[in-house]
Length: 276
Image: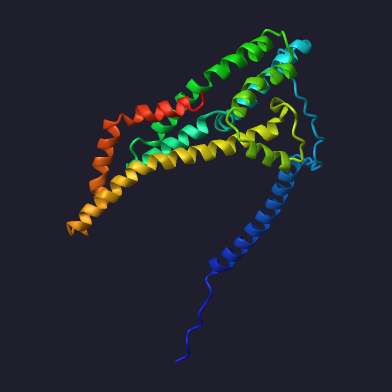
């Protein structure tokens, strides 16, 4: 039997035509919409990438009127500079170096690792330094600092006056050998008066002498404690106690000896009187 012929439904052709019509209409509407949106967008302004001209920097000090105000500002700046260098002045130009080294040797000779600790040693050395340097500081204050603050003398003269008592103190502690060494190193002729020596020669000579004196005092402090260590070690060896550390036994005896002879009093008295 012959196969029946399949017929395409009439609505499929109509649907295809409708889709094509809608596509053309959407394309036309989209083009018109895009043109309208493009007309509505404002034109983009070009960005200027040229670097801006540098702005001049000016420094002004408010409240300064005339030379006197500027002089006050320079005084404050000079004072801040001196305060920043104060630790170096304290260590190199005073008795602090000898005192703190001797106290450090004393603690090491006793054998107590952190008794007294560093803060106590430095604090004691600082106060002993004030005691030793008080006559020098009073003279510097009366002859240089107070006249300068009262505007009776200038900065140069105040600095020259302040050097005199400090130089006298350092010259009383230096050795001729150290002074001759630094005169040779700086190619300077020896003046007829020791007070005419430059601070460039006096300061390192003073520091060198303080180091030698401090090590000599430290050696003397070590001797009695070293004797106690040797006696304790000999006793332990004679008793056959090889495994017992001698330091463990000798430390209480060294502390007892130091307390009985009032060691702190003697050390502080020796340190202060050595500068007088």
